[in-house]
Every structure is written in structure tokens, then in C-alpha cells.
Amino acid sequence: MSSHSFFSVSLVFAFFLASCQAPAPAATALPAETTQPPAATAPPATATEMPASALPASADPSRTPTWVWVEPTQPATPTPLPAFQPRAQSANTLRAQADIRGILIGAAVNNGLVHEADYAEVLAREFNLITTENAMKFGIVHPEPGRYDFQAADEIVNFAHGHDIQVRGHTLVWQKQMPEWLQYGDWTPEQVREILHRHIETVVGRYRGKVEIWDVVNEAMTGNGDVQRNFWYKQLGPEYIDLAFQWAHEADPDALLFINDYAAEGINKKSDGLYELVEDMLARGLPVHGVGMQFHLDSGGAQNLDSVTRNMQRLADLGLQIHITELDVALNDDPTPEDLQEQADTYQKILQTCLALPQCTAFITWGFTDKYSWIPETKDGYGSALLFDATYQPKPAYFALLETLQTK
Ligand code: XIL
Image (cartoon, rainbow, N blue to C red; front, top):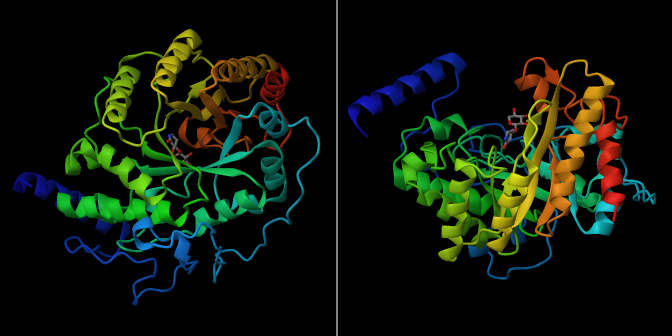
């Protein structure tokens, strides 16, 4: 590292410390990885022990297929999960129709919410897949060097499995929502490589057989179709992508591994770059199984769906699956009935585009109720982006999807 860049990193780091008064992370020594808290700190909210069968494959020679659930000894919230309800028999749900068609229908979920009875009821009734919205991001699951906190992630995985719902783990490698100790620590490339390897091995290993699908790498491409010069690239070069997929595959050989991105739905420079990247990875025998298309849209952002179809088709021709991973359609505040109908049409056309291609195997919205959505927090003046309103009433978009799933 040049003295100049060392100086700027140190400055940023010093500023961060001053502003949040966090204790200085161990910036030089690579600590021994452990799921136990360091002795001097209070026990984490959950002291869940790592089940033997969830240890990284390399540490588990018996490779026991049964996953033994160990209850958190100290749950962060004492509220019990809503009692398990047998699934509604009605065929008039997205989930029942998706089951019939053999497609995954999912929603992104934050932990904590599954304790809300209405939320839990709609989630279990309408979806057969959950994506972890934030709970498995690096900064949450690995908050200090060598210490993991799986409480939020466990809560979601527990809920999903209690309701026979598959889980899509999001995400192992991303340049956002990283912990400060990693982002601003003075690590060598060798140390970063080791940290990432152990992170993936530990997180994927823990949920081996429990999380069926992973977004291994998120948002790796620039708009020009190059690999972003992000933290991981600067430390490890573009090989960080190969390594992440290899390590995830080693930790759970049965998991489906995806690369996920936004604004690469139709054919454009970015999706061309992504296509070349996965084509090259496949040619080199790397375990990449699918491409996730985020699809964050707003009311004015109509997609050229012919172009999306062509892009999906060329990826499918490589033998990859396609997932629609984060769909939402943001509307201006106080939408009119016409706005809601236009939104319903958008949802419907995207589902039709997916259903037309057998390799498009999952349709996932980024949340499901307007009560909890990232849109109002991040896009001023926008909201109402999801399928249910804030009181869990289905919106026109919900009925449009149900009708589309029922149409043969
Ligand atoms: C968003 C979450 O929804 C927010 O709660 C969080 O504050 C920021 O991240 N692309 C992704 C997701 O891949 O991880 C992002 O999720 C939305 C954009």
C-alpha cells in the first residue's frame, strides 16, 4: 500500500472511530475464527452452538445428512413464533398455484417480522421461498473479526423450515453492508482471502442442507460490463468471484449458486459483461448455476421485455437458471387506482416473461407488504411498491399474479 493510500485509509478509519466511538478493530492480526464471542465481551444475543453436521465440509468427515437444530440458548426476543399452522388448503393462493406449476414464488424477509402474526400468516400462505433481506449480509452475520452472529438468520431459517418454505441466502460477497472492521481494517490481501474463505465456509456450512440457494456474489458489474473495482477486487483481483463460488460449493455441494445484479435484465452493456463472465466461468468448470435479475422498477420504468426474454434465453442456453430476485414496482406516494392497475400490469408481464421460459425458476419480490419495504426509506416520495398494502390487503398486482399463475 502506498503511504498516500495508507494515509487516506487511516484517515477514513480514524474518522469512523471518532464518529461512532467503536472500539478499534484488530487491524493487523488475523484472529482465529470462532462462533464464540471473545472472552472479554458479553455473550451475543444468541449463543447458538454450531451443530456438528453444519461445520464446514472440510471439518465434517462424517458428512451427516441430518441437520440437528440447536435452539438458541438466549433468544434476543422472548416472543414465540406464531404456532405452526397447517397450510391453507385453498388453491387460491400464489403459493398453491406456484406449487402446481413447479415454480418458486418468494419474498424478501427481515427477521423479527416473522413474530408479527399477520405478517407470518400471509408469508406462509402465499410464498414457498424466502430470501433473507438483510440477515445474512456480511456486516450482520460477521460483526467482529472472528465472531459470527446467526441469530437473525436462524430466526428466518427456522420460520421457513417450520412452514416448508425454501430459503435463498443473500448474500455472501458484496461491497455494501460490510462490517467496518473489514472495510477499514489494514488487511493484507492474504488476510482478506483467508477472511473471505472462512466466512463463506462458516456461513454456507452452517446452513448446509437448510439454505438451498445462495446469492454468492452481488452487484459485481459496472454499467459498462466490467467487473467493479470494489473492495474485493482491489484486494484479491477479479478472481474473488471464482474463489467465492468455489468455496461456497465446497461448503455445500448441493446448493444452487447465483450471481445477482441490477440493471442487467435486458440486453445492454452490463448484461453483456455479465453474460461473458458467467460463460467464461462455466467454460472453466466453475460451479455457477444461475443469474439473478433484481428488477427494482418504478412506475415510469417500463421494461423492454423482448430484450429481457432474449437475455434470459441466452443465459438459459448456457445451461443456467434465471431467478427474478428483487422485484418491486415503486409508485409515487398516494397512488391512484390507475397507478395501481399499471403496477399490476408490470408485475403480470414480468411473471409472464418468466413463466414462458422453463429455466426461469423463481419469481421473488423484495418484501410483500407496503408496511415493510425499503422503497420509502431509500426513494423519497415513492412507496406502495409491493403486492399487499400496509394492512395486508391484496392489491391489484397480487390478483394479476394469481390470475397469471392460474392461466395454463
Ligand atoms: C436493501 C435492503 O432492502 C434494505 O433494508 C437495506 O437497508 C439496504 O439493502 N439490492 C440488493 C439488496 O441486492 O441487498 C438491497 O437490500 C436492495 C438492492
